Amino acid sequence: MKHPHVIAVFNYFLALALAPLLTGVVNRVKARFAGRSGPPLFQAYYDIAKLLRKGAVYGAQTSWIFRASAPVILASGMIALLTVPFGGASAPLAFGGDIIVLAYMLGLMRFFTIVAALDTGSSFEGMGASREAFFSALAEPALLLGVAALAVKTGWMSLSSMLPAASPVSFELILVVAAFIIVYLAENARIPIDDPATHLELTMIHEVMILDHSGPDFGCIEFASSLKLWILGAIIVDIAVPYRSGWWFVDCAEGVAGMLVLAAAVGTVESAMARLRLLRVPQLLVAAGALSTIAFLLVVR
Image 1 (cartoon, rainbow, N blue to C red):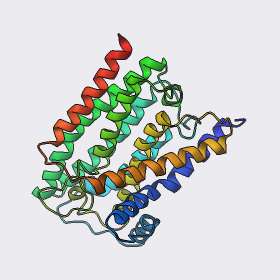
Image 2 (cartoon, rainbow, N blue to C red; image 1 turned 180 degrees about the vertical axis):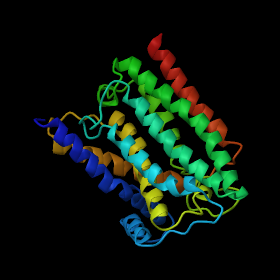
Image 3 (cartoon, helix red, strand yellow; image 1 turned 90 degrees about the horizontal axis):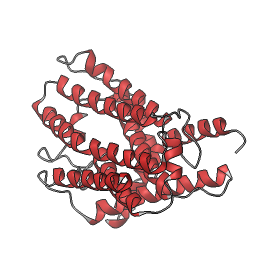
Image 4 (tube, rainbow, N blue to C red; image 1 turned 90 degrees about the vertical axis):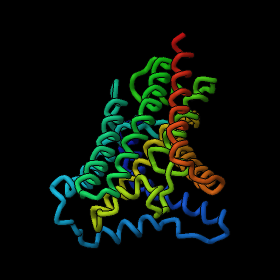
């Protein structure tokens, strides 16, 4: 790779372009399992474009926090994406400790989603915000401990050096990947943690928090959700897929294929199992934290 910075920027814009496609793959796989043809693969692009052409409606009781939430959520997602390597190439924003920036940007996305829901004054959205805060507090340690295990094992503090070096299969990496998959489902509000397609009041978590968003604001949040799906998925794919060809376009194609396979796997999981009871979700997230803790203890022994 003669121009690593150019490749990193190319991969960044490729991720921006392909992130909504993951949602389309998940929905298409779920439709096939249900015996339906399902929506087009590019339906998420159509929906976002339609929302951006509409006007936004704001409740009289909302403040500037609600109006600022959607742009901040999208900007945080785009900054977080800058720290994630892809296709064997470094991230555009790669430095020692860049995982801290990633964690803070994901946390900022979550924070503004929660406070925007609370700003509406709706007890319904407040219920979803409370659940989101509680489950995120259980998911974050699993992610950070897993990254700490990778850092100790590889000796690198940057994701761009850490993830490629972690490719060889070992028992510790299997534990970390298993924990990351649970976090991936939880952070993206997928089954068995949450059902993005539900409209039942007692089971909604993420969707209930964005009910009052409309028009461009809702489009920004939908696109940010797609970016989050890509960001956390890219971390899993970078560990699981060994990039060894030496040709950037081959490695990039492998990465894209890995992301599509992961999206198809999410659709399969959502088709094969039901959503867990709310009381069972913390147990699953604690199990993810336990897997990351065991992996960390194994690499530091």
